[in-house]
Length: 287
Image (cartoon, rainbow, N blue to C red; front, side, top):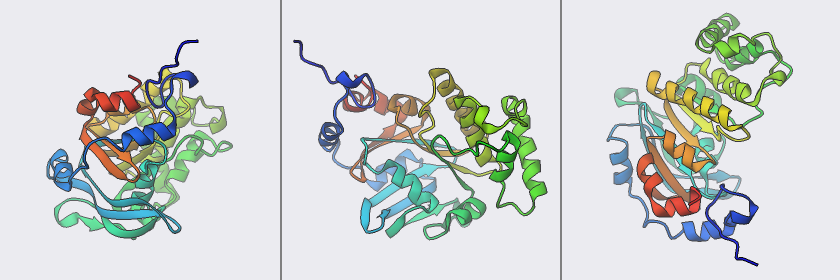
């Protein structure tokens, strides 16, 4: 019987995938740590989202340890790494879903920069322009597409304003406009993901936290979702911080990439550079 070959993480079938434990073991050997100065260089010395010395987790469990992050306005960052590395915890911490033990989170530029570390999720959405696009199955299935969009504006001053913002979304995405009176549960997987993204846009955020945008989608819908995210970044100047299990696709999309291991950054570089890195390729890209 021939020996089974392991070629990466989140790629291939059951016979070709390295165990999570082995990926963690090998990933811990990557790099020698990444300095805040290097992160600042990648963000062009103009951070719009800045995390300094953050320690955060859930309950008494600390998952992020003295964590730093810098992303410039209009940049995109993809976070990759093995399960349990703390990728989603970063998004949760920025949006206010974790317990903060230390450090701070800043958003903005110049005189408009503000410390949002202790703000609630609602305050971060309304006052700091940060929206969280959850993983799949966050739509309200029995509501219509239109009603789902209205729910995206629940923090706006009036329902009328929420409806006006929804019309802007319909004008941008004809695919949703054609289904505005349909129940969300009848949408395809790609259409549901488009609705999830569009619902976040009703508040007209500046920063999008995107959690696993390709999860559960057919390849043709994955293409559609990344085309939408590219338009939001390149066309509208949104700043995007993403966790993506399809590491290759995420790094192809993003300007920057961080490789996380046990709550810390093992490697940081441009997305293109990480795609070409043989260690990243071996562990996370399937070759």
